[in-house]
Length: 51
Image 1: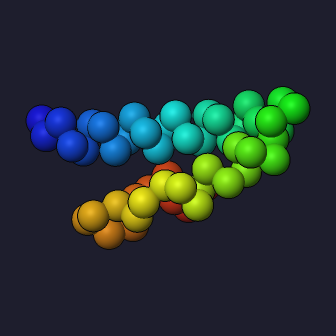
Image 2: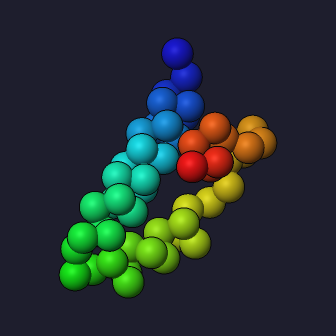
């Protein structure tokens, strides 16, 4: 069970949660930039990227 894969998945879920929560939050403008900060996965496309 590679720690790197688990960390990537956790970060994906955390980022997605922030984006969903941001839609009803005063910081929506800041959270909308989250996908720009997120680096691409090192092993190709990630399933959550299609959301």
